[in-house]
Amino acid sequence: MSALGGLNKTPNGVVIGLVQLALPAVKTPADLAAQTQRIVAMVGKARRNMPTMDLVVFPEYALHGLSMDTNPAIMCSLDGPEVAAFKQACIDNNIWGCFSIMEQNPGAYPFNSGLIIDNTGAVKLYYRKMHPWVPVEPWEPGDIGIPVIDGPKGAKIALIICHDGMFPEMARECAYKGAEIMIRTAGYTAPVRDAWRFTNQSNSFCNLMVTANVCMCGTDGTFDSMGEGMIVNFDGTIIAHGTSGRADEIITAEVRPDLVREARKHWSVENNIYQFGHRGFTAVAGGAQDCPYTYMQDLAAGRYKLPWENEVVHTDGTSCGFPAPARRFGERLDKAAE
Image 1 (cartoon, rainbow, N blue to C red):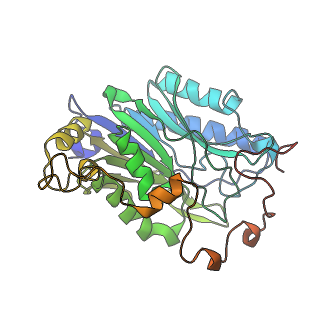
Image 2 (tube, helix red, strand yellow):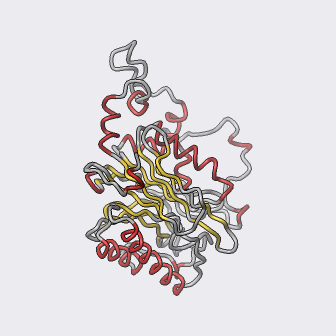
Image 3 (cartoon, rainbow, N blue to C red):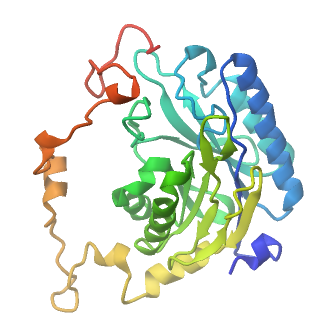
């Protein structure tokens, strides 16, 4: 199904490359500039490595590393030099690219943002991570939802970031909005390997959706990221998997969005993305279309509360050295977080 990693590209195929990028240590603007050029060079490598490739995907933290440093001097903006360099790399190599930035957000903590840029240098998708990996990550929770775009060959593509993929609701939202391919970029380290694998497969199977997933790789002298590039078909089977842990390896495969569309139309049993909203359609016309899930009702009403809510120990970032927050979601401070 992978068409030998995309070497044998078919007319309806989309070839994806997942870059298991070596984990950097970025502390200064000079480090940031050097890492930007390293990513640009890897875009060129991806094109040379696989002339059939449509989309090259870089992991979360590809630009900034795993330090969680919110220093404004190394934060990025959509109109900054880093994004401009990524745009030019996509133009120069006639390829779509998926990139990660830590984005300036004056008056609050930075956003952990992802971009998909097309082969003309246009930003087609812009996403802010909705579920930072608390309490470790200080990033502002995303506030623009999950966009879905028309990508190469007209494939419907969504992007989520790392911890987002541990919430089945995130993948379901992508599919509900039409995504046929969901990209999941990450910086995860080895202790999360098993959860990474089975959530990637579950996200695909439960939504009849291809998922393309990749982490940073190697060590920065403190953290050890795991690579684990995984392309999973809509039936949950793994098409390609980077198990070597080799930094800078590019995991490739062809995927078929047309077969996703076919399955969503023609599957009967296990067409879960449809059947979720049409419970028991064999017994009742159209199936039950109510919302019997208490957690959904409570979340929508602003009263989400677990039975053990008052016993939860970690409810802010103080255990990881961050000050207890003084703002509510949507509020701003007079100056950017430092």
